[in-house]
Amino acid sequence: MATQQALQFEYPTHEELLHSYQAYYKTEFGIAYHANSLDVLRELPEKSINSVITSPPYALHFKKEYGNADKKDYVDWFLPFAENIHRVLKDDGSFILNIGGSYNKGEPTKSLYHFKLLIRLVEEIGFYLAQECFWYNPAKMPVPAEWVTVRRERIKEAVEYVWWLSKTPHPKADNTKVLKPYSADMIRLNQRGLRETVRPSGHAIRESFKKIESGGSIPPNVIEEECLPSDMLKFGNNTANDKYTVACKEQGIKIHPARFPAALPEFFVKLTTDMNDIVLDPFAGSNTTGWVSERLRRKWIAIESESEYLQASKFRFGNILS
Image (cartoon, rainbow, N blue to C red; front, side, top):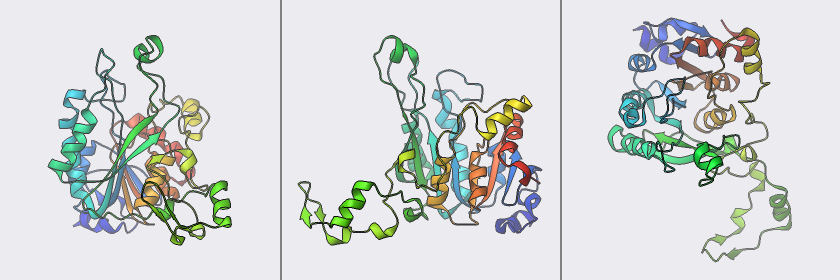
């Protein structure tokens, strides 16, 4: 069957991956589809994807132009996507879900919808919570303005949740691929030598802690620019002068209003996949995940229902499109 043959991504077989869909565009490593992502997910073969890295439309109490489900309906809306993501993931695969929090309408209190979603993803769909991570985004606006800048009753938020979910308790992952540079203080401490001791917390510091030769320190679960390896892309995907934004303005094409910073999918692509693994983004938007995967020589599939966003995403790839 053509669909099964595509599991190996033996080029040129892009069209065979999903025989009911025509590629919107292709590259050496990936393929983008203009389609309803739930329909595409249902047709993808079981256990065919190594990692799903995505940021679906957030559930906000007001309607955004890129299509939000209402908060009260969001969890039920998302579960069919999650069921199929679980089905198409390989047993050692990861599901990286970036999801934003939200205030309750008319009052300075927070919604619990994203926590409710997490619980159902684990208890109903069968995912494991490998780790909760946080994307530190200092560029976030001080909203809701009523509570933050007018009444001054709340502080500005600067993190978003990133749930790292998996099909088994042991998904493929290697944190040596995302080691960050040692600080100057750590280098000096290592050169001076570590003294074996027991901290007040009870943690024993032994000679085995001396691992400066390993190439870097293990990053925390707060993903921010200061924690990234020096060879990784930096944050700032929403700047006014990046390649994607400039091209959109020149061509008069709408810029996606909520773009992934490239460093975020890059971090998790490196952490959870190997070269030639398959990465899927079912809510591709401006297709940052696909572009990052292309740079890292991972095979990728992008699905986006808005043709204008997908058309603009071509600007990320320049002359490598086919």
